[in-house]
Length: 154
Ligand code: SF4
Image (tube, rainbow, N blue to C red):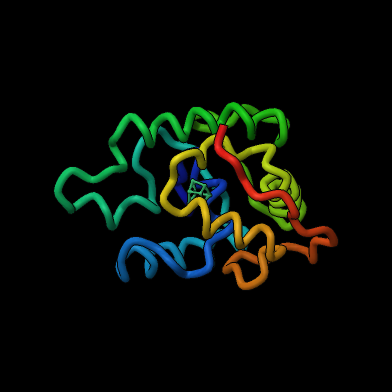
């Protein structure tokens, strides 16, 4: 099995602490985070992914909107050089602790947060980063430095 993720959700799983849009959404995402933490591979997809799934039955789910697609483009643009591979449809990767830590260091220093601009969870995610990602569902190694600079959308 693999976890299907759209690019900007590579960021969202870094800060996930069990909060989200609905009980169905968080229940699903907690299971997905557990699978990722267990080493299950990610397949990058275009459009709604396994995290979006519980949202798709609602009226006009935001997962299809251009604004969300633009988050994917922004995330792919910034994550590709960081990870050394093209984050595009069909790319497969495993979020091991080294990759999680590399992503979190970059996230905390606002190097990969263009996708977060205008997101309703931005303040929470910034707080999680400032707190050294304590309490998140996916654990990394202990990061030595914590973010000090709040995220400011470009
Ligand atoms: S601010 Fe929004 S897009 Fe950025 S990591 Fe948090 S939930 Fe994801």
